Amino acid sequence: LLFTAIDEIVDPEDPGAAEFQEFMGERKTRLGRYIDETDIAINHMLDVSHALRRQGRTDAVPSPNTDLNDIVHDALVITRGKVKFIEIDKKLDATKRFTCRRSQIGQVITNLLANAADAISDTHEGDSEKNGQARIRIETLHHHHDNSEGLKLIIADNGPGIPEENRAAIFED
Figure 1: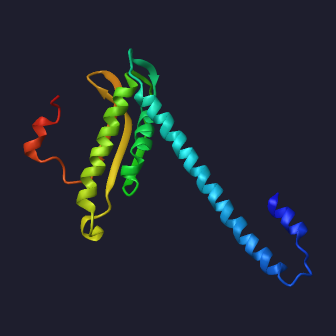
Figure 2: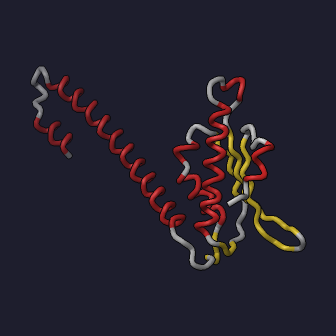
Figure 3: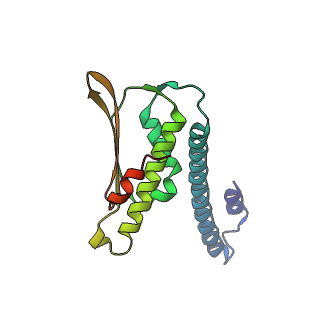
């Protein structure tokens, strides 16, 4: 609206009009980019806020009808800053819903992603041709075990792995 009003006010016979209109056109383009970038930032903040709210709740009781892919999505939103330079290969095929303590499962997935990002960032710094692209693979799928139907989550990275001497301490409190 402002730019339309300026176009109407500017006298086309004025020798500086074309230069002024070009200047204002550049400003309009720049302002449009700022608005687009602001919109993206606001949507990202909303995503983070929603993900943190879902994961931040203490689950007094397990939540029925939970979608594992939604939990993975929230964990990726929360860890976006850590994984932004890492190639994420997602294959989220699990469609079966399940009952779980959503915030606890979300915290586990978030920790796994953050730890993987930290480990492979150190490995893949510097010479990317020598070390290759940092990559995390996330997969959800249906899984059958001992005549029971369930879900399987795979989080794998191309980092160095956990040293043998530290593996026994992984599940300690």
